Image 1 (cartoon, one colour):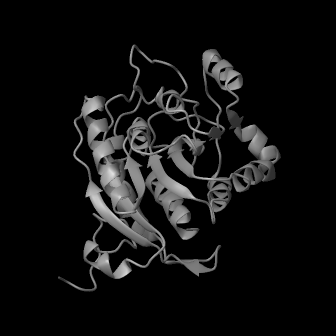
Image 2 (tube, rainbow, N blue to C red):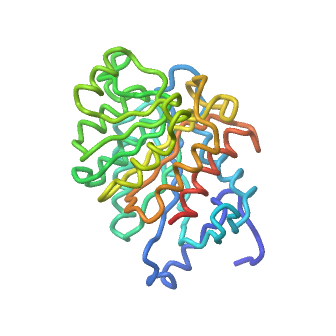
Amino acid sequence: MLFYTESPLQFAFSKLWDDYEADLNDTKKFGFIGVPFDSTSTYKPGSRFGPRAIREASYNFERYNLVLDKNLDVSLFDFGDIEVVQGNFEKTSSIIQFTITELLDKSIIPVAVGGEHTISAGILEALDVENTTIIHFDAHMDLRDEYMGEKYSHATVMRRIFDLNPKDMIQIGIRSCSEDEISFAKENKITYFTPHEINKNIELVKNTIVDIEGPIYVTVDIDVLDPAYAPGVGTPSPCGLNPFQLESLIHCLKDKDVIGFDLVEVSSIEIGDITSINGAKVIYDFLAVQ
């Protein structure tokens, strides 16, 4: 074992698996896994490269968080990327579910990084969501029942998650959807906030998160950010959130019972690009408030 070395193949601040036994008394443990799957992308492919790009970008941050005035000191273990079957979501989803179940059996909270947004459906299949509130950061509702003849797609993922019967679903940053999707959201009492509403009254959104009781699952499509801050995504949409707004909303997860977290749709093959940096920052902020 070499000391004083860093590996861009692991998320910054993650611990070696050898340290797991020493951390048995920690109240929370997090398992970082990459899911490099992007077979249903319909505009810009490449999110299969997201996990590596985010890991590399994570080394730009200090352990000390100036905004929160604390060190990032959670027990985080990076287990690498799972094996995916490009072009076959069903097989990939089975592998995702098996992996998440293994983490849960070890009392490890999954932090998954895509890859495209369909991976969230596979993760939540392995979780008990009936008493869980889903917080969904995205430019798009993703509530279509099917897209281009496919039931499982980046454009249908939240509909498949809704089918799992979660306690509640809150969508934040929405600015693109079909007429059928908005009708479905209203009929099923799905709460959603547009960037216009967030710009007008972000405190309302923050209070909505703070007031949630019980387990929470968080899924972040990085295209929730305006393309000025995240151009390297599968489906960019103008007039989105800025990083300050997203940071403040993620900070509202402090002291919450988050049972899982994912960040998806970073489509980048460049080192140090702004999309990867902002993607890594979202994960950093989430871990910092745990």
